[in-house]
Length: 350
Image 1 (cartoon, rainbow, N blue to C red):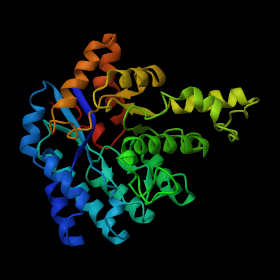
Image 2: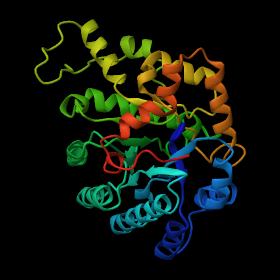
Image 3: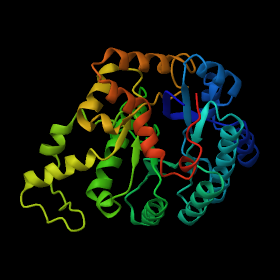
Image 4: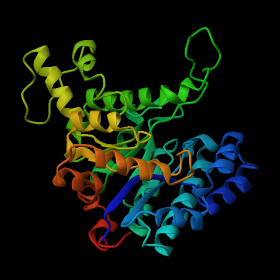
């Protein structure tokens, strides 16, 4: 039985790379650079050697960014999602000792197609959940056109993985034509995640779909660090209330409800192995909502560094045995228990 479940790791299967090149006429320059450096995205032999350095360690894999909708029109992104999911399912089938499962990608530029692919991936491929990014070609996920996606997700009762994404085209200042110095990613991605979480709460999605289980990347982004501003800074809040729950009677009560709903999200430990980032997430979300993840292989060593160093961070923290177990495996198993693949074979791994 796995002693460590890495719940948010990234792959780019060879079959996906080859299909992308054939279908679109070449590899996007941004992705070409990633492939040259992050060989463990597709070199599964190297990846397995890295994983074997850590006893009892296994992974849940997700497709890396850019978002699947960014590669072309909806017919292209739909087919790419299918190829990606077939390839990830094959990785898991071929090596269940290293891979606990995979998370299916869907292309939300075609919502009907995304629903079909969600159904197929969960039913036929035994995906453990669904992954999306924080926007769909610039559209927010609380836009009404995506409501059927959340309805179907709630019907399936599987977790949702959410990865931040924005490009240099979203500028740092209105007077400029592109973001400078990489700020679009270093600071823009945590902002994206924070806004995604906030908009879902304030648009009522967590109340409308109370069984939603959402895993956000990078330890909850800005939320645990700026909780005081969430209370004091957000204005004109809608009357957040679940079915049967009375409307809030004061702004203070409304603020408290919003904070409580942030704490329903699951967040991971993928913060470049920084102890303070993990501790802040634990303090805000609680140990029952923090899962172990490393962003592998986006560390400086193309695989092992953030696995090793994140485990070391947990060793250095004042964690009870119960809380450590929850972070390493317990919360992941609880999240995955209702997924199609989680109902049967989930004793293996590592």
